[in-house]
Image (cartoon, rainbow, N blue to C red):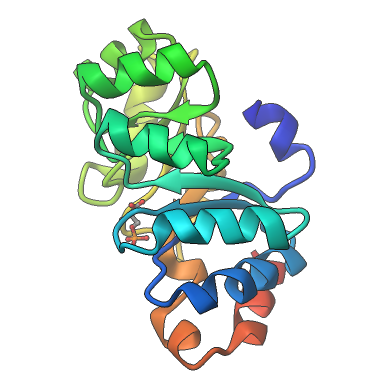
Length: 202
Ligand code: 3PG
């Protein structure tokens, strides 16, 4: 599924924190207008699920996912709202089993070789490398490419405008994620044009 989506979307996954539900649709529209379509709506605020529903219904072209999922219940709630992909910051037997039963595009969060192995054994060859910068960044991803040649990563955590292209240049990186594409200052000023401009440049 990721390959199919990446044929028609930039390999950038904004990690979106929704402080005000009224911001969800214009923020998503601003990103989609800039060609950034894979949107990770986090459950870090209580507005995450509502934001998923709104964006699904009101923003054509958006591919809406849910992030910061830490339990099977959250995964089920987000899927019931129409989330098309699921991202978690780490793995647990509960999350892996729930995602396996669902069978859709799930990015389990990994930071160590043992976690890469566990997630791969559960059937997931596309994984989120988190927290990327703190867990070894580019050097760690290069080290993963030897033993885990069949696994592809979406690094997130500590990535920004200055270095995301260095990550994207790696053979085992299929996309890069982070909050830099929706800066808090632009969101609180409702400066949607700034977000579109950054997305176009990305
Ligand atoms: C995530 O959940 O992917 C990260 O917290 C995003 O990290 P960032 O804010 O450093 O981009």
